[in-house]
Each structure stands twice: as structure tokens, then as C-alpha cells.
Amino acid sequence: MQLSALKKKVGTFTDLTLSSPLKVGLAFDLKPALDEASQKFSIWNPDSSGWEESRKAVAAYFQERGGYFHPEWIQLTSSTSEAYSILFKTLCDPGDVILTPLPGYPLLDSLAALEYLKTAPYFLKREKEKWALDLDSLCTFPAHTKILLLVSPNNPTGHVLSHAEWDAVIDFASRENLAIIVDEVFGDFIYDGTERPWNWDSKDVPVFFLGGFSKSVGSPQLKLGWIAYRPGRLGEKLKAAIEFVADAYLSVASPAFALAEPMLRASKEYEEKISERVQENLQILRKKFPSTEIFPQVQGGWYAALHFDGEEDEALTLRLLEEKKILVQPGFLFDFDEDGWIVISLLSLMRNENSGASRENHQNLPF
Image (cartoon, rainbow, N blue to C red):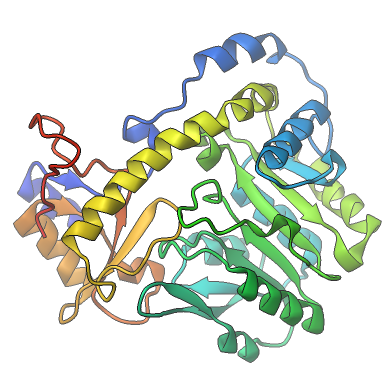
């Protein structure tokens, strides 16, 4: 039976796939920012890098978190997807290869294919308590590889890049003449104290950090992203090349530029609301599934991956919907290397808010 037909058959169910703050009652309060920025909505001031004041706002966002990027080394985009497109055009030729992580988000393959590029996998391996990069899997990279793509925190495992892993991938990229893209759209949501690698040694490697409104202020509808970068061996010519591509589109709207400063100024307070929800749900899951064999440690992000032996993930997903009235994502969507994985959004409500129960007395999930 098709999933859509099964959803109709089961009637009311708990949706544990919702991952947009707009759909789970955690929308950013836009009114103060709109009041401040709306007078600039009608300004048209084309700049291939993005409005300078908006780039300064992104630089201040990084500085508040301990990262230092000059506004000249920040490129504004309409989304993280567009940031990928700009970098793929800048760094690659058709037929070149990008190394992408598995398990991972399937959109990355599509974005590469749209630029006539190929992807090749490297892997995350499950250790007893958490996930780690399988550094040996990098050694099998094919010819014409140009980019190593890191996702930290990883979607869907919640793996966060360690300092030791960073040193290893930088050595690899320097030796093999690669660039590194760090997709850190969930980077504001790290729960184990791991630092983000902005200030770690990157040698001569060009490194690009991607983020945006979609996660940092929970507002994908406003369409603003950024690339903050260290040019490495590519030097000053890199900036001109990125701006050449971006100038062909000028895709960011004036309202998004105008909202950058007031929204990012309030982003820390917003992050606390998201983190509170995620931490509460992590506690619920940990009480329900104390074994790290089922529920490896989530270091960051908005998702949790759980593994159940003895059942195919598609069958498990359909059974949970039909019998337990909960909707999850099957692991095959993220290319897990074994059956039995499901992925749950940590933004979805997991406690019974109508029961009058205290925060310590959570509703049990119906697994």
C-alpha cells in the first residue's frame, strides 16, 4: 500500500517527521525585525556579494559565537542550495567529483547532478556511543575529485566533526589539492560542547562554511543564506570568481538583506527556544531507548536516528504508522548501510501537552 493511502487509512497519527519550526509552533517572532527593516524593502542596491550592511551582520553573527570572518570574505545567497550551486560552478568542471557523506541528506546528490557533477561516498561509522568519520573511506576517492563536503552536525546522525577529524581531513585535502565545503546549517545546535572549526588550522586548503536563515532563525521562507570562507591557496582570485557567478543571478531580495541585521541580532535568543525543545525530546528518547546500540549519541542538529534489528526499515516505518499511529522517516532515504534505521525529527512534540503532566512525567512514545 502506498504511504499516502496508508495515512488516509490510519486516520489521526503523530507526525515525527516535521522539521520546520514554522510547523511545530517555534516560528521566529518577525514583528520587531519587520518594524525595523521594512523601510528598506523598496531599496534596490545591486551588489554581487550582497549588501555590505548585511554581510557585516553575518560577520557579527560569527563573532558572537567566536568566529572571525571579514565581510569581504562573506558571500550572501538566497539559500544554502544556491550556495552549493555557486561553489560547484566556481570550483568544478562538468564531470568532476564531489565526496559526500553516507548516511547523508539525499539533496546533495541532486544538487551535484544539476551542475553535471558526480558524487562519490565516504562514510560515517557507528561506534558504540556515537558516530565518527570513517577516515579510511576517503582513501578510495576517484579521479577528478575537487571537493570534500562535510556536514556538521550531520543530517540525520547528529555527528559533529571533532578537532582530530578536522586535522585529518585538512591533511587529506591539502595533500590531494581539494577544497572543503562545511555545511553547518545546524551548527548553532550542538549539544556536547564541541567547537565549530572556524578557527582551526586549515593550512592551504580553501574552506567554505555554509549557513543561513533556514535554521539559524528558523525562517526558510525568507531565503537568505551565506558562504563564509578562507581562500587558502586560491587567494584573491577566488573572491572574483565567486562574485562573477553570483552577479549573474543577483537572487537575494531586498527584504531578506534588510532583515539580516535585526534577525541575526536576535538569533541567540531564538536558538535557546529550539535547543530547549530538542534537549527535552532527546531526554525522552534516551529514557525510552537507553541502549546506544539502538540510539547512538546525538551531538547536534534536529534529528535522531534509531536502529532496530530484525526488520527492514521500510516495513518498520509502515508498521509504526499502521499499528502505532506514528510517522517516521525510513533509513533508506539517507542511505544507511543496513536495514532497521528510522529517523525522527527532534522538533516534533513528543510529550502529551494536554495531559497536565509535568515535564518530568512524559508521555511514552508508542514504539
